[in-house]
Length: 313
Length: 291
Picture 1 (cartoon, rainbow over the protein chains, first blue to last red):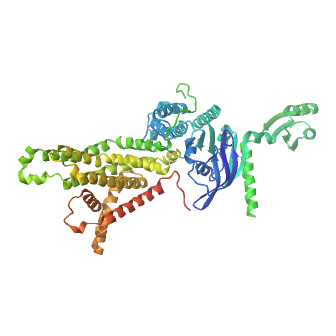
Picture 2 (picture 1 turned 135 degrees about the horizontal axis):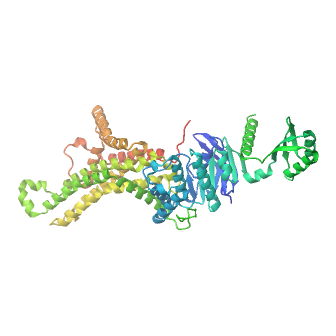
Picture 3 (picture 1 turned 60 degrees about the vertical axis):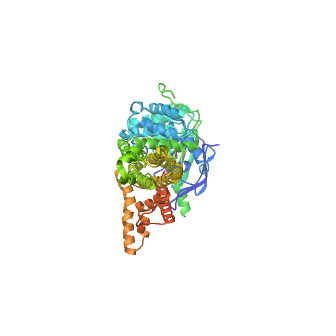
């Protein structure tokens, strides 16, 4: 059973199809939800929370139907919305306690966990201040604290680093990594920032125009994709490139001794140095990189564009 | 999750029943409403007429006091349905003042800070949310309406030298039913209007306006169309008619201000339904943008 199962989910809002036939099973410990603005990320989250009803298909969270078992699903979810969402007139600790009690914790336990959650996210010193006096970063953290306090099984974070300065962003990312490392919570993180997802997630669902553009395990995808390398050489570049082609590499040479090559898995950088030494070629610079999430994302966007173009033809 | 360790641990304890979460909402709404000094001040103000009535009942059941006021005062000290109708009317209109202050506090804070997505992401339905707030508002208004009124009734029954309570049970029923209908109407009206107005002070004004402005419109309708059905927009007249009938008090001398009970019930139900529709439209975790 996956964390989230989507089976032909279609969501219409104001007679417009916002999510179109989403099908897939998400199993990762931390699942990233990527896509450009308006791709349907927040709508998918709202559907999982039972705020929107699918017009077709079914969505399941831990095997529970988002339509029939709404209350049960919500009991096991911690949700941190994208926009400001809190009760500004309450102190931080009272707000988090209130939310924990609504999630089902007895009053005394909720108070204890509220204090702990606020210390955990780093708001311990300001927990008695009213929420509307908090800075933007603090407000993000108090939303995270309320989502965590009741010990959910799935934590949904909608744009968690929105509006944060670099230091606050790094702190938020570190918190998310810590929660992931602890292991008892699955995470669903929606963002349009590739870096956030790259740093925190092991699986990614990429949406575009309400469709799934890609659903993949980031690590596996990186492993399965080819590695690119850029070399800057001095000496008999042409002969050197012929030799490395013989190893099974695809390569292209450029003026100034620059060579771009795609190396298969069984070839190591060391092999290139050996050939270079044999032929008296100096390797002045070597840049190796695997497929980044950005590559995966851009490829998914291209594929989706092609599919749309074919569809319109 | 120990504070000194500052690392996360999952919660493995028991959870409260889903049905009890409504009471959590009600408790927090109640605390929010009563955290204001103005609420406490208004509550004390609302109890002043009850204290006056208590004194009147004491004097009415005191032979020396009755002898002192003489024949003309006997009528003034008569404890009957008419006496309790006056108390109920006074308390009910004071309840409107209290409701117009409390209702916006319960709902506008949530709306102003966009708290609904977070609140409704918990195992609580939209109906549960509104019902929780309704319980808190209804409970607060009960403290100044049927509760003190029934206490006065009990005190009169206790202090009267004749067996008074059993022969006047309709008064007790009228006090309870009349107050419950009125505060239920006020609660749903207060919540519905507060959910559409973000600013508390404006919401307070709007609640007052919703009770009294239609009365003026109704008077114009009655005058222009030469009918008395315009009274169905006049909440004070409608409720006075209802309370008088429920308590069994003498009918008003001017028959022009009489409205059939069925029409009153229909009008209150219609207003209630409109309020429910307003709440249904407004209390949502997400707004759907049309277009």
